[in-house]
Image 1 (tube, rainbow, N blue to C red):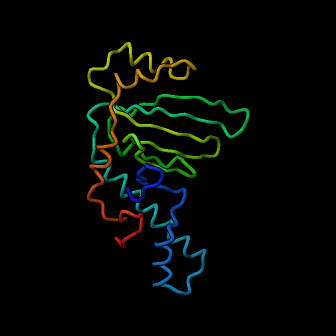
Image 2 (cartoon, rainbow, N blue to C red):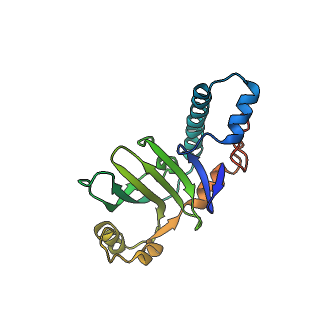
Image 3 (spheres, one colour):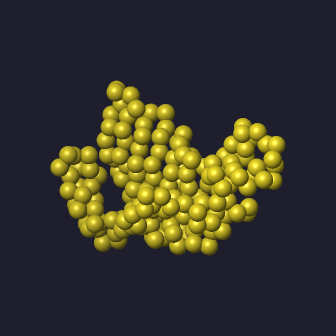
Length: 188
C-alpha cells in the first residue's frame, strides 16, 4: 500500500526501496551524507517497515488454510521450472511474508489478489496467495495439488475452491501511516 504502479498496490518491496522523495528528505536533514550512508539508512528503515507490515498482517487470520500458487523459473538451465502449491495451515496472513529472498515485492494486483514476486540465488518466482474455501471439495483440492503443473490445467477451477485474501491484506494495513499514498516515508 505504500506505492502504486502498473495497477498494483505495493505492500512492501526490496526491489526499489530508495524512493527519490525519501532520499531527498534525508539529504535535506543531512546535506553531507554520502550515497553509501544514504542507501544504508534507506535499506535499514525499509526492513524495519517489513517487520512492521509482517506484524500487522500476523494479526489477521484468513479463517482457512492459505494456498500459495508459486511459479518458479530457474536461473540456471539445470534448474527445473514449474508451478507448485504450498500451504500455510494456520491461515495467518503474516506468514505469507518471509525473508527467504534476495529481492522481493509483495503487492495487490489489478484483480485484487495478494501476490509476490522475487528473486533468490536459484530462482525467479511469482506467487499468489488465496484462502481455501470452506466448502471446497476434496476431489477439487486433490486435483489442484496433483495437476497444477500440467500444461492443460484448467485455472477456472481455482475460482471454485479459493478465495482472494487481497481485501484482508488491505484492510489490515488501512491505518498504516508509515508511508503516504505516493510511497514517501513520513518519519514514523
